[in-house]
Amino acid sequence: MRFSAGNSLRFTSRSSYARHSPMTSSSADIVVSFHQVQLSLGGRLILQDFSLDIRRREFVCVIGPSGCGKTTLLRLLAGLLKPTSGQVVHEGRPVTGPSPDVAIVFQDYAKALLPWRTAAGNISLALESAGMPKGERSDRIAALLQKVGLSQHGNRYPAQLSGGMQQRLQIARCLAQEPAVLLMDEPFGALDAMTRQSLQDEVARIAADSGTTVLFITHDLDEALYLGDRVVALKADPGRLARLVDVPLARPRDQLATYEEPGFHGLRRSLFGLVQGNHS
Image 1 (cartoon, rainbow, N blue to C red):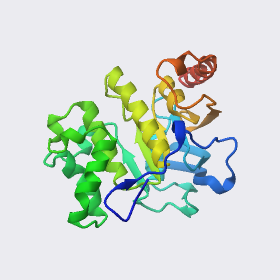
Image 2 (image 1 turned 30 degrees about the horizontal axis):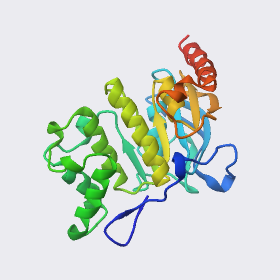
Image 3 (image 1 turned 90 degrees about the horizontal axis):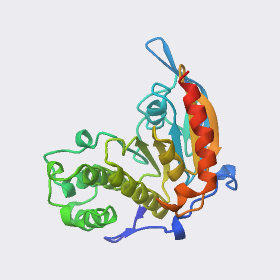
Image 4 (image 1 turned 180 degrees about the vertical axis):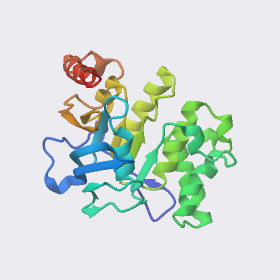
């Protein structure tokens, strides 16, 4: 997604939420690379020899047991941590610190939002940081609120919104940055099942419409398969790549039909056994 010169949001849409196939993309499409990344903290090896290429517009989900380094990957890509050895590269350049091209959606939406600002004010924060003149913000904020289904709630404060609405608001604020890469750290883990399903579909739609590359952390195998073009399975102690799985399920995905596909069940069995084995 990129803002146009006028006052409206302009999206590059793709029909049926289509995304680049990881099997057909060329090396020129690679937007993020982890090259033999290793990280030690306090004398403990957290991540060992991790390598991964992520393609433009790709939705990559990461699963694995607690302590395997899932969130660490996000922090490395966000520039919040520096690898002990190896390199993290974004758009051909080493990641040396935070970038406006990379946005993070946290699991704890209550702490991520500013409670003294309204929903519109929280989105405005990202636009203010980008130096957008005040007179140009209102239409942009309105378009983002509409995009995440909060058009009628712009004047409400976070405490007046449900958990699902607060997470939608956090996503809208991230989209205001116009990120090339969206990092999502178990964003739906604290939500009820119905809200979770609704937001899964919204995020899939938004990512496809905007062309954003997504790295999504989850403990939920079904969620990883439902959302991902590929699934990265990690082992723990230290964190390292166990398997990289392509997810050739048709898009747009459906909360009923996709889960009933034979291919879905086969992938789930494969990943379930792998993750269960990581605990032993």
